[in-house]
Image (cartoon, rainbow, N blue to C red; front, side):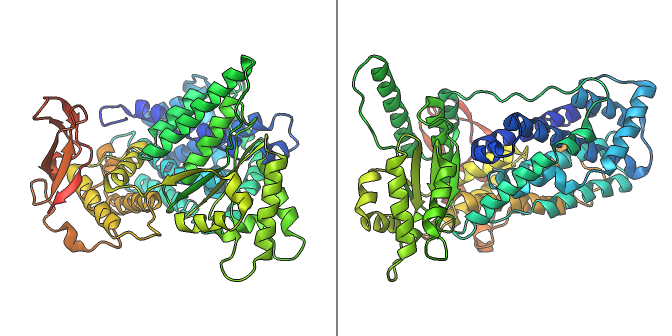
Length: 553
Protein backbone atom coordinates (compact mmCIF):
# COMPACT_ATOMS: atom_id res chain seq x y z
CA UNK A 1 0.00 0.00 0.00
CA UNK A 2 1.42 3.45 -0.93
CA UNK A 3 2.42 5.60 2.05
CA UNK A 4 4.20 8.85 2.88
CA UNK A 5 7.61 7.23 2.34
CA UNK A 6 6.94 6.76 -1.39
CA UNK A 7 8.12 9.55 -3.67
CA UNK A 8 5.47 11.11 -5.99
CA UNK A 9 6.57 9.24 -9.16
CA UNK A 10 6.42 5.88 -7.32
CA UNK A 11 3.00 6.68 -5.85
CA UNK A 12 1.79 7.86 -9.25
CA UNK A 13 3.02 4.71 -10.98
CA UNK A 14 1.34 2.44 -8.42
CA UNK A 15 -1.98 4.26 -8.67
CA UNK A 16 -1.89 4.11 -12.47
CA UNK A 17 -1.37 0.36 -12.22
CA UNK A 18 -4.36 0.07 -9.83
CA UNK A 19 -6.47 2.09 -12.28
CA UNK A 20 -5.58 -0.25 -15.14
CA UNK A 21 -6.28 -3.30 -12.97
CA UNK A 22 -9.70 -1.92 -11.94
CA UNK A 23 -10.81 -1.41 -15.55
CA UNK A 24 -9.31 -4.74 -16.71
CA UNK A 25 -11.03 -6.82 -14.01
CA UNK A 26 -14.26 -4.91 -14.62
CA UNK A 27 -14.00 -5.84 -18.30
CA UNK A 28 -13.69 -9.49 -17.22
CA UNK A 29 -16.87 -9.16 -15.17
CA UNK A 30 -18.74 -7.79 -18.19
CA UNK A 31 -17.45 -10.61 -20.41
CA UNK A 32 -19.02 -13.07 -17.95
CA UNK A 33 -22.25 -11.13 -17.43
CA UNK A 34 -23.07 -9.96 -20.97
CA UNK A 35 -21.73 -12.54 -23.46
CA UNK A 36 -24.76 -12.32 -25.77
CA UNK A 37 -24.68 -8.53 -25.94
CA UNK A 38 -21.01 -8.68 -26.95
CA UNK A 39 -21.65 -11.37 -29.55
CA UNK A 40 -24.53 -9.33 -30.99
CA UNK A 41 -22.25 -6.33 -31.59
CA UNK A 42 -21.23 -7.65 -35.02
CA UNK A 43 -17.52 -7.22 -34.25
CA UNK A 44 -15.08 -9.95 -35.24
CA UNK A 45 -13.65 -10.26 -31.68
CA UNK A 46 -16.09 -8.40 -29.42
CA UNK A 47 -14.55 -9.66 -26.17
CA UNK A 48 -11.09 -8.41 -27.08
CA UNK A 49 -12.54 -5.17 -28.43
CA UNK A 50 -14.42 -4.53 -25.18
CA UNK A 51 -11.36 -5.29 -23.04
CA UNK A 52 -9.29 -2.94 -25.22
CA UNK A 53 -11.90 -0.19 -24.90
CA UNK A 54 -11.96 -0.51 -21.11
CA UNK A 55 -8.16 -0.26 -21.14
CA UNK A 56 -8.41 2.90 -23.27
CA UNK A 57 -10.95 4.33 -20.83
CA UNK A 58 -8.57 3.89 -17.90
CA UNK A 59 -5.85 5.65 -19.89
CA UNK A 60 -8.20 8.47 -20.82
CA UNK A 61 -9.25 8.91 -17.18
CA UNK A 62 -5.60 9.09 -16.09
CA UNK A 63 -4.85 11.73 -18.74
CA UNK A 64 -7.94 13.76 -17.86
CA UNK A 65 -7.09 13.78 -14.14
CA UNK A 66 -3.44 14.64 -14.76
CA UNK A 67 -4.11 17.49 -17.17
CA UNK A 68 -6.97 18.94 -15.10
CA UNK A 69 -4.70 19.39 -12.07
CA UNK A 70 -1.56 20.47 -13.93
CA UNK A 71 -3.34 23.14 -15.97
CA UNK A 72 -5.18 24.58 -12.96
CA UNK A 73 -2.34 27.02 -12.21
CA UNK A 74 -1.51 27.48 -15.94
CA UNK A 75 2.03 26.15 -15.64
CA UNK A 76 3.81 22.80 -15.83
CA UNK A 77 6.56 22.54 -13.21
CA UNK A 78 9.62 20.31 -13.47
CA UNK A 79 8.14 17.89 -10.94
CA UNK A 80 4.88 17.73 -12.90
CA UNK A 81 6.84 16.98 -16.06
CA UNK A 82 8.51 14.12 -14.21
CA UNK A 83 5.04 12.70 -13.49
CA UNK A 84 4.17 13.27 -17.16
CA UNK A 85 7.11 11.03 -18.09
CA UNK A 86 5.71 8.33 -15.78
CA UNK A 87 2.27 8.73 -17.36
CA UNK A 88 3.66 8.42 -20.91
CA UNK A 89 5.53 5.26 -19.93
CA UNK A 90 2.29 3.83 -18.52
CA UNK A 91 0.22 4.81 -21.56
CA UNK A 92 2.52 3.84 -24.39
CA UNK A 93 5.56 2.02 -22.92
CA UNK A 94 7.74 4.90 -24.15
CA UNK A 95 10.35 6.97 -22.31
CA UNK A 96 10.34 10.62 -23.45
CA UNK A 97 12.37 13.59 -22.29
CA UNK A 98 13.09 17.16 -23.28
CA UNK A 99 11.30 18.68 -26.26
CA UNK A 100 9.63 15.40 -27.20
CA UNK A 101 8.08 15.11 -23.74
CA UNK A 102 6.92 18.76 -23.80
CA UNK A 103 5.28 18.29 -27.22
CA UNK A 104 3.56 15.14 -25.98
CA UNK A 105 2.29 16.99 -22.90
CA UNK A 106 0.76 19.69 -25.07
CA UNK A 107 -0.80 17.03 -27.28
CA UNK A 108 -2.26 15.23 -24.23
CA UNK A 109 -3.68 18.52 -23.00
CA UNK A 110 -5.58 19.04 -26.24
CA UNK A 111 -6.92 15.50 -26.22
CA UNK A 112 -8.03 15.70 -22.60
CA UNK A 113 -10.12 18.81 -23.32
CA UNK A 114 -12.27 16.73 -25.68
CA UNK A 115 -12.94 13.99 -23.14
CA UNK A 116 -16.10 14.20 -21.03
CA UNK A 117 -15.96 12.83 -17.49
CA UNK A 118 -19.07 10.73 -17.81
CA UNK A 119 -17.81 8.89 -20.91
CA UNK A 120 -14.76 7.77 -18.91
CA UNK A 121 -16.69 6.36 -15.95
CA UNK A 122 -19.93 5.29 -17.68
CA UNK A 123 -19.38 1.53 -17.13
CA UNK A 124 -19.39 1.96 -13.34
CA UNK A 125 -22.63 3.95 -13.41
CA UNK A 126 -24.72 2.02 -15.94
CA UNK A 127 -23.52 -1.59 -15.66
CA UNK A 128 -25.07 -3.02 -12.47
CA UNK A 129 -22.33 -5.58 -11.58
CA UNK A 130 -19.73 -2.77 -11.56
CA UNK A 131 -21.60 -0.42 -9.23
CA UNK A 132 -20.04 -1.96 -6.14
CA UNK A 133 -16.66 -0.71 -7.47
CA UNK A 134 -17.65 2.96 -7.55
CA UNK A 135 -15.87 3.65 -4.26
CA UNK A 136 -12.67 2.07 -5.56
CA UNK A 137 -12.77 4.12 -8.77
CA UNK A 138 -13.46 7.33 -6.86
CA UNK A 139 -10.58 6.63 -4.46
CA UNK A 140 -8.06 5.94 -7.24
CA UNK A 141 -9.00 9.03 -9.27
CA UNK A 142 -8.89 11.41 -6.28
CA UNK A 143 -5.59 9.99 -5.08
CA UNK A 144 -4.10 10.39 -8.56
CA UNK A 145 -5.23 14.02 -8.52
CA UNK A 146 -3.72 14.58 -5.07
CA UNK A 147 -0.36 13.09 -6.07
CA UNK A 148 -0.18 15.47 -9.02
CA UNK A 149 -1.24 18.43 -6.84
CA UNK A 150 1.44 17.56 -4.26
CA UNK A 151 4.22 17.01 -6.79
CA UNK A 152 5.84 20.38 -5.94
CA UNK A 153 5.40 19.99 -2.18
CA UNK A 154 2.77 22.41 -0.93
CA UNK A 155 -0.66 22.29 -2.53
CA UNK A 156 -1.82 25.70 -3.71
CA UNK A 157 -5.41 26.84 -3.42
CA UNK A 158 -5.91 26.62 -7.19
CA UNK A 159 -4.68 23.02 -7.37
CA UNK A 160 -6.71 22.09 -4.27
CA UNK A 161 -9.74 23.53 -6.03
CA UNK A 162 -8.99 21.39 -9.10
CA UNK A 163 -8.84 18.25 -6.93
CA UNK A 164 -12.16 19.13 -5.30
CA UNK A 165 -13.66 19.79 -8.73
CA UNK A 166 -12.59 16.32 -9.92
CA UNK A 167 -14.07 14.74 -6.79
CA UNK A 168 -17.35 16.59 -7.29
CA UNK A 169 -17.49 15.49 -10.94
CA UNK A 170 -17.06 11.87 -9.91
CA UNK A 171 -19.61 12.08 -7.09
CA UNK A 172 -22.09 13.68 -9.49
CA UNK A 173 -21.66 10.92 -12.07
CA UNK A 174 -21.24 7.97 -9.73
CA UNK A 175 -23.95 8.32 -7.13
CA UNK A 176 -24.98 4.78 -6.08
CA UNK A 177 -28.10 3.70 -7.95
CA UNK A 178 -30.35 1.31 -5.97
CA UNK A 179 -31.21 -1.76 -8.03
CA UNK A 180 -32.39 -4.07 -5.29
CA UNK A 181 -36.16 -3.68 -5.64
CA UNK A 182 -38.07 -6.29 -7.63
CA UNK A 183 -39.14 -3.68 -10.19
CA UNK A 184 -35.63 -2.38 -10.83
CA UNK A 185 -33.74 -5.39 -12.19
CA UNK A 186 -35.18 -5.09 -15.70
CA UNK A 187 -34.24 -1.40 -15.95
CA UNK A 188 -30.74 -2.20 -14.65
CA UNK A 189 -30.38 -5.06 -17.16
CA UNK A 190 -31.42 -2.81 -20.04
CA UNK A 191 -29.11 -0.02 -18.88
CA UNK A 192 -26.24 -2.52 -18.81
CA UNK A 193 -26.95 -3.71 -22.35
CA UNK A 194 -27.21 -0.14 -23.62
CA UNK A 195 -23.97 0.78 -21.87
CA UNK A 196 -22.15 -2.19 -23.44
CA UNK A 197 -23.30 -1.07 -26.89
CA UNK A 198 -22.34 2.57 -26.27
CA UNK A 199 -18.92 1.62 -24.92
CA UNK A 200 -18.23 -0.52 -27.98
CA UNK A 201 -19.49 2.26 -30.27
CA UNK A 202 -17.14 4.80 -28.71
CA UNK A 203 -14.18 2.40 -28.92
CA UNK A 204 -12.46 4.13 -31.85
CA UNK A 205 -13.12 7.59 -30.40
CA UNK A 206 -11.52 6.75 -27.04
CA UNK A 207 -8.64 4.92 -28.73
CA UNK A 208 -7.92 8.00 -30.83
CA UNK A 209 -7.83 10.14 -27.69
CA UNK A 210 -5.11 8.04 -26.03
CA UNK A 211 -3.28 6.23 -28.85
CA UNK A 212 0.49 6.56 -29.16
CA UNK A 213 2.04 8.21 -32.18
CA UNK A 214 4.27 5.21 -32.79
CA UNK A 215 4.20 2.04 -30.71
CA UNK A 216 0.68 0.85 -29.81
CA UNK A 217 -0.07 -0.32 -26.31
CA UNK A 218 -0.28 -4.02 -25.56
CA UNK A 219 -3.65 -5.65 -26.01
CA UNK A 220 -5.03 -6.67 -22.62
CA UNK A 221 -5.10 -10.43 -22.37
CA UNK A 222 -8.24 -12.31 -21.43
CA UNK A 223 -6.90 -14.99 -19.06
CA UNK A 224 -8.52 -18.40 -18.88
CA UNK A 225 -10.19 -19.22 -15.58
CA UNK A 226 -9.48 -22.36 -13.59
CA UNK A 227 -11.67 -24.12 -11.06
CA UNK A 228 -9.06 -23.56 -8.33
CA UNK A 229 -9.12 -19.81 -9.01
CA UNK A 230 -12.91 -19.64 -8.67
CA UNK A 231 -12.99 -21.77 -5.52
CA UNK A 232 -10.22 -19.65 -4.01
CA UNK A 233 -12.35 -16.57 -4.66
CA UNK A 234 -15.28 -18.33 -3.01
CA UNK A 235 -13.12 -19.08 0.06
CA UNK A 236 -12.18 -15.42 0.34
CA UNK A 237 -15.80 -14.40 0.86
CA UNK A 238 -16.55 -13.44 4.44
CA UNK A 239 -18.80 -15.81 6.39
CA UNK A 240 -21.11 -18.20 4.47
CA UNK A 241 -19.33 -21.29 5.86
CA UNK A 242 -22.26 -23.73 5.25
CA UNK A 243 -22.72 -22.38 1.71
CA UNK A 244 -19.01 -22.75 0.95
CA UNK A 245 -18.99 -26.35 2.22
CA UNK A 246 -22.02 -27.24 0.09
CA UNK A 247 -20.55 -25.74 -3.07
CA UNK A 248 -17.20 -27.46 -2.55
CA UNK A 249 -19.03 -30.75 -2.06
CA UNK A 250 -20.93 -30.12 -5.30
CA UNK A 251 -17.68 -29.32 -7.17
CA UNK A 252 -16.07 -32.50 -5.80
CA UNK A 253 -19.10 -34.56 -6.87
CA UNK A 254 -18.96 -33.16 -10.40
CA UNK A 255 -15.22 -33.86 -10.62
CA UNK A 256 -15.72 -37.46 -9.57
CA UNK A 257 -18.56 -37.91 -12.07
CA UNK A 258 -16.34 -36.54 -14.85
CA UNK A 259 -13.60 -39.02 -13.90
CA UNK A 260 -16.13 -41.87 -13.91
CA UNK A 261 -17.28 -40.93 -17.40
CA UNK A 262 -13.67 -40.87 -18.64
CA UNK A 263 -13.20 -44.32 -17.13
CA UNK A 264 -16.27 -45.63 -18.96
CA UNK A 265 -18.29 -45.98 -15.76
CA UNK A 266 -21.93 -44.93 -15.45
CA UNK A 267 -22.41 -41.47 -13.99
CA UNK A 268 -25.12 -40.20 -11.66
CA UNK A 269 -27.32 -37.38 -12.90
CA UNK A 270 -27.73 -34.61 -10.34
CA UNK A 271 -30.05 -31.63 -10.62
CA UNK A 272 -28.04 -28.42 -10.45
CA UNK A 273 -31.05 -26.13 -10.11
CA UNK A 274 -30.97 -24.55 -6.65
CA UNK A 275 -33.00 -22.47 -4.20
CA UNK A 276 -31.13 -19.65 -2.46
CA UNK A 277 -33.02 -18.44 0.61
CA UNK A 278 -32.08 -15.58 2.91
CA UNK A 279 -32.50 -11.89 3.65
CA UNK A 280 -31.20 -9.14 1.33
CA UNK A 281 -27.47 -8.51 1.17
CA UNK A 282 -26.40 -11.98 2.31
CA UNK A 283 -24.34 -12.69 -0.81
CA UNK A 284 -26.85 -14.66 -2.89
CA UNK A 285 -26.10 -12.89 -6.18
CA UNK A 286 -22.34 -13.00 -5.56
CA UNK A 287 -22.42 -16.73 -4.88
CA UNK A 288 -24.69 -17.33 -7.90
CA UNK A 289 -22.13 -15.57 -10.08
CA UNK A 290 -19.33 -17.70 -8.64
CA UNK A 291 -21.38 -20.87 -9.03
CA UNK A 292 -21.85 -20.11 -12.72
CA UNK A 293 -18.10 -19.67 -13.05
CA UNK A 294 -17.54 -22.99 -11.26
CA UNK A 295 -19.77 -24.71 -13.82
CA UNK A 296 -17.98 -22.88 -16.63
CA UNK A 297 -14.50 -23.80 -15.37
CA UNK A 298 -15.56 -27.46 -15.06
CA UNK A 299 -17.13 -27.58 -18.52
CA UNK A 300 -20.61 -28.28 -17.14
CA UNK A 301 -21.76 -25.07 -18.84
CA UNK A 302 -19.90 -23.77 -21.88
CA UNK A 303 -20.03 -20.11 -20.72
CA UNK A 304 -21.04 -20.01 -17.08
CA UNK A 305 -22.31 -16.43 -17.27
CA UNK A 306 -25.07 -15.13 -15.00
CA UNK A 307 -28.31 -13.54 -16.21
CA UNK A 308 -30.09 -11.84 -13.32
CA UNK A 309 -33.80 -11.06 -13.46
CA UNK A 310 -37.02 -10.99 -11.44
CA UNK A 311 -40.77 -11.05 -12.10
CA UNK A 312 -40.64 -7.88 -14.21
CA UNK A 313 -38.15 -9.54 -16.57
CA UNK A 314 -40.37 -12.60 -17.12
CA UNK A 315 -44.02 -11.57 -16.77
CA UNK A 316 -45.67 -9.28 -19.34
CA UNK A 317 -48.60 -6.93 -18.88
CA UNK A 318 -50.86 -8.38 -21.56
CA UNK A 319 -52.15 -11.85 -22.47
CA UNK A 320 -49.95 -13.80 -24.87
CA UNK A 321 -46.75 -11.86 -24.08
CA UNK A 322 -45.47 -13.63 -20.95
CA UNK A 323 -44.39 -16.84 -22.72
CA UNK A 324 -42.25 -15.07 -25.36
CA UNK A 325 -40.82 -12.69 -22.74
CA UNK A 326 -39.82 -15.56 -20.43
CA UNK A 327 -38.35 -17.53 -23.34
CA UNK A 328 -36.29 -14.51 -24.40
CA UNK A 329 -34.78 -14.19 -20.93
CA UNK A 330 -34.04 -17.92 -20.82
CA UNK A 331 -32.36 -17.70 -24.25
CA UNK A 332 -30.01 -15.05 -22.81
CA UNK A 333 -29.05 -17.46 -20.02
CA UNK A 334 -28.44 -20.57 -22.15
CA UNK A 335 -25.04 -22.15 -21.39
CA UNK A 336 -25.05 -20.21 -18.13
CA UNK A 337 -27.10 -19.50 -15.01
CA UNK A 338 -30.51 -17.83 -14.83
CA UNK A 339 -30.82 -16.13 -11.43
CA UNK A 340 -34.38 -15.10 -10.53
CA UNK A 341 -34.38 -12.82 -7.51
CA UNK A 342 -37.46 -12.48 -5.28
CA UNK A 343 -38.83 -15.46 -7.23
CA UNK A 344 -41.78 -15.84 -4.85
CA UNK A 345 -43.38 -12.82 -6.56
CA UNK A 346 -43.97 -15.01 -9.63
CA UNK A 347 -47.02 -16.47 -7.90
CA UNK A 348 -49.35 -13.95 -6.32
CA UNK A 349 -50.77 -14.83 -2.91
CA UNK A 350 -53.94 -12.87 -3.71
CA UNK A 351 -56.22 -14.49 -6.28
CA UNK A 352 -55.32 -16.30 -9.48
CA UNK A 353 -52.13 -15.01 -11.13
CA UNK A 354 -52.43 -16.42 -14.65
CA UNK A 355 -49.44 -14.49 -16.03
CA UNK A 356 -47.13 -15.55 -13.20
CA UNK A 357 -48.17 -19.18 -13.53
CA UNK A 358 -47.56 -19.01 -17.27
CA UNK A 359 -44.02 -17.78 -16.59
CA UNK A 360 -43.42 -20.66 -14.17
CA UNK A 361 -44.77 -23.24 -16.63
CA UNK A 362 -42.63 -21.82 -19.44
CA UNK A 363 -39.61 -21.93 -17.15
CA UNK A 364 -40.26 -25.56 -16.14
CA UNK A 365 -40.60 -26.65 -19.76
CA UNK A 366 -37.36 -24.95 -20.81
CA UNK A 367 -35.53 -26.42 -17.80
CA UNK A 368 -36.43 -29.85 -19.18
CA UNK A 369 -35.83 -29.03 -22.86
CA UNK A 370 -32.48 -27.33 -22.19
CA UNK A 371 -31.40 -29.31 -19.15
CA UNK A 372 -27.83 -29.64 -20.46
CA UNK A 373 -27.49 -25.91 -21.19
CA UNK A 374 -29.25 -24.17 -18.32
CA UNK A 375 -29.02 -23.91 -14.54
CA UNK A 376 -31.75 -21.99 -12.73
CA UNK A 377 -31.37 -20.42 -9.28
CA UNK A 378 -34.46 -19.08 -7.50
CA UNK A 379 -33.77 -16.66 -4.65
CA UNK A 380 -35.79 -14.89 -1.98
CA UNK A 381 -36.94 -14.83 1.65
CA UNK A 382 -37.12 -18.34 3.25
CA UNK A 383 -40.82 -18.49 4.15
CA UNK A 384 -41.99 -16.95 0.86
CA UNK A 385 -39.77 -19.31 -1.16
CA UNK A 386 -41.20 -22.31 0.70
CA UNK A 387 -44.72 -21.22 -0.30
CA UNK A 388 -43.62 -20.81 -3.91
CA UNK A 389 -42.18 -24.32 -4.13
CA UNK A 390 -45.23 -25.84 -2.46
CA UNK A 391 -47.50 -24.13 -4.99
CA UNK A 392 -46.20 -26.22 -7.91
CA UNK A 393 -45.17 -29.92 -7.93
CA UNK A 394 -42.82 -29.22 -10.84
CA UNK A 395 -40.83 -26.79 -8.73
CA UNK A 396 -40.65 -29.26 -5.85
CA UNK A 397 -39.18 -32.00 -8.05
CA UNK A 398 -36.64 -29.81 -9.82
CA UNK A 399 -35.34 -27.76 -6.88
CA UNK A 400 -34.22 -30.35 -4.36
CA UNK A 401 -30.99 -28.45 -3.56
CA UNK A 402 -31.49 -25.59 -1.10
CA UNK A 403 -28.91 -23.20 0.35
CA UNK A 404 -29.72 -20.97 3.33
CA UNK A 405 -27.88 -17.66 3.47
CA UNK A 406 -27.97 -16.65 7.13
CA UNK A 407 -27.68 -13.03 8.27
CA UNK A 408 -24.10 -11.90 8.84
CA UNK A 409 -23.18 -11.52 12.52
CA UNK A 410 -21.76 -8.21 13.85
CA UNK A 411 -18.13 -9.33 13.50
CA UNK A 412 -18.74 -10.56 9.94
CA UNK A 413 -20.41 -7.25 9.07
CA UNK A 414 -17.37 -5.45 10.49
CA UNK A 415 -15.06 -7.71 8.46
CA UNK A 416 -16.98 -6.79 5.29
CA UNK A 417 -16.61 -3.11 6.18
CA UNK A 418 -12.90 -3.61 6.84
CA UNK A 419 -12.46 -5.40 3.51
CA UNK A 420 -14.09 -2.50 1.66
CA UNK A 421 -11.77 -0.07 3.43
CA UNK A 422 -8.67 -2.16 2.74
CA UNK A 423 -9.57 -2.60 -0.92
CA UNK A 424 -9.87 1.16 -1.30
CA UNK A 425 -6.78 1.91 0.83
CA UNK A 426 -8.46 3.46 3.86
CA UNK A 427 -6.95 3.08 7.35
CA UNK A 428 -9.09 2.41 10.42
CA UNK A 429 -7.68 3.58 13.78
CA UNK A 430 -8.84 1.74 16.95
CA UNK A 431 -11.63 4.19 17.83
CA UNK A 432 -13.01 4.05 14.29
CA UNK A 433 -13.11 0.26 14.50
CA UNK A 434 -14.75 0.42 17.93
CA UNK A 435 -17.48 2.80 16.75
CA UNK A 436 -18.17 0.68 13.67
CA UNK A 437 -18.34 -2.45 15.84
CA UNK A 438 -20.71 -0.83 18.34
CA UNK A 439 -23.03 0.49 15.62
CA UNK A 440 -23.11 -2.75 13.65
CA UNK A 441 -23.89 -4.70 16.82
CA UNK A 442 -26.89 -2.46 17.44
CA UNK A 443 -28.08 -2.81 13.84
CA UNK A 444 -27.81 -6.59 14.10
CA UNK A 445 -29.61 -6.73 17.45
CA UNK A 446 -32.54 -4.71 16.06
CA UNK A 447 -32.71 -6.40 12.66
CA UNK A 448 -35.95 -7.62 11.08
CA UNK A 449 -36.75 -9.76 8.04
CA UNK A 450 -35.64 -6.92 5.78
CA UNK A 451 -32.21 -6.38 7.38
CA UNK A 452 -29.80 -5.13 4.72
CA UNK A 453 -26.69 -7.14 5.72
CA UNK A 454 -23.93 -6.42 3.18
CA UNK A 455 -25.95 -3.64 1.58
CA UNK A 456 -26.16 -1.84 4.94
CA UNK A 457 -22.38 -2.11 5.26
CA UNK A 458 -21.87 -0.78 1.74
CA UNK A 459 -24.04 2.24 2.61
CA UNK A 460 -22.03 2.76 5.81
CA UNK A 461 -18.76 2.72 3.84
CA UNK A 462 -19.94 5.13 1.15
CA UNK A 463 -21.34 7.48 3.80
CA UNK A 464 -18.02 7.33 5.70
CA UNK A 465 -15.78 8.21 2.75
CA UNK A 466 -18.02 11.15 1.82
CA UNK A 467 -18.05 12.44 5.42
CA UNK A 468 -14.26 12.12 5.41
CA UNK A 469 -14.07 14.08 2.14
CA UNK A 470 -16.18 16.87 3.65
CA UNK A 471 -13.97 16.89 6.76
CA UNK A 472 -10.64 17.30 4.94
CA UNK A 473 -11.76 19.18 1.81
CA UNK A 474 -10.60 22.59 3.05
CA UNK A 475 -7.23 21.39 4.36
CA UNK A 476 -4.58 23.15 2.20
CA UNK A 477 -1.84 20.49 2.38
CA UNK A 478 -3.23 16.98 2.56
CA UNK A 479 -0.87 14.13 3.41
CA UNK A 480 -1.42 10.58 2.23
CA UNK A 481 -2.28 9.67 5.83
CA UNK A 482 -5.06 12.28 5.90
CA UNK A 483 -6.38 11.03 2.57
CA UNK A 484 -6.51 7.43 3.76
CA UNK A 485 -7.63 7.64 7.40
CA UNK A 486 -11.27 7.29 8.42
CA UNK A 487 -11.79 8.83 11.84
CA UNK A 488 -14.51 7.86 14.30
CA UNK A 489 -16.39 11.05 13.36
CA UNK A 490 -16.69 9.75 9.79
CA UNK A 491 -18.66 6.70 10.97
CA UNK A 492 -22.35 7.51 11.17
CA UNK A 493 -25.33 5.22 11.79
CA UNK A 494 -28.67 6.79 10.96
CA UNK A 495 -30.67 4.29 13.04
CA UNK A 496 -28.44 3.95 16.10
CA UNK A 497 -28.91 6.35 19.02
CA UNK A 498 -25.90 8.44 20.08
CA UNK A 499 -26.10 7.02 23.61
CA UNK A 500 -24.66 3.71 22.39
CA UNK A 501 -21.36 5.47 21.63
CA UNK A 502 -21.06 7.39 24.90
CA UNK A 503 -17.67 7.08 26.58
CA UNK A 504 -15.97 5.90 23.39
CA UNK A 505 -12.23 6.00 24.12
CA UNK A 506 -9.26 3.69 23.69
CA UNK A 507 -9.42 2.81 27.38
CA UNK A 508 -13.13 3.55 27.85
CA UNK A 509 -15.88 1.32 29.27
CA UNK A 510 -16.52 -0.66 26.09
CA UNK A 511 -14.98 -4.15 25.92
CA UNK A 512 -14.50 -6.39 22.89
CA UNK A 513 -13.87 -10.14 22.78
CA UNK A 514 -10.61 -10.90 20.96
CA UNK A 515 -9.90 -14.50 19.91
CA UNK A 516 -6.47 -15.94 19.18
CA UNK A 517 -6.53 -17.60 15.72
CA UNK A 518 -4.02 -20.25 16.88
CA UNK A 519 -5.41 -21.56 20.17
CA UNK A 520 -8.86 -19.88 20.08
CA UNK A 521 -8.30 -18.40 23.54
CA UNK A 522 -10.58 -15.37 23.96
CA UNK A 523 -9.96 -12.28 26.07
CA UNK A 524 -11.94 -9.11 26.68
CA UNK A 525 -10.05 -5.92 25.82
CA UNK A 526 -10.72 -2.16 25.54
CA UNK A 527 -11.16 -0.35 22.22
CA UNK A 528 -7.49 0.60 21.99
CA UNK A 529 -6.55 -2.99 21.14
CA UNK A 530 -8.63 -3.12 17.94
CA UNK A 531 -6.57 -3.10 14.75
CA UNK A 532 -3.30 -3.54 16.63
CA UNK A 533 -0.91 -6.43 17.08
CA UNK A 534 -1.46 -8.24 20.38
CA UNK A 535 0.01 -11.32 22.08
CA UNK A 536 -2.12 -14.25 23.21
CA UNK A 537 -1.69 -14.77 26.98
CA UNK A 538 -2.11 -18.55 26.56
CA UNK A 539 0.03 -19.60 23.57
CA UNK A 540 2.17 -16.47 23.14
CA UNK A 541 1.19 -16.08 19.46
CA UNK A 542 1.20 -12.54 18.04
CA UNK A 543 -1.82 -11.59 15.91
CA UNK A 544 -3.67 -8.47 14.73
CA UNK A 545 -6.95 -7.99 16.59
CA UNK A 546 -8.91 -6.66 13.61
CA UNK A 547 -12.37 -6.83 15.20
CA UNK A 548 -14.01 -8.16 18.34
CA UNK A 549 -17.53 -8.94 19.51
CA UNK A 550 -18.96 -6.30 21.84
CA UNK A 551 -19.25 -7.77 25.34
CA UNK A 552 -19.82 -4.71 27.58
CA UNK A 553 -20.05 -0.97 27.69
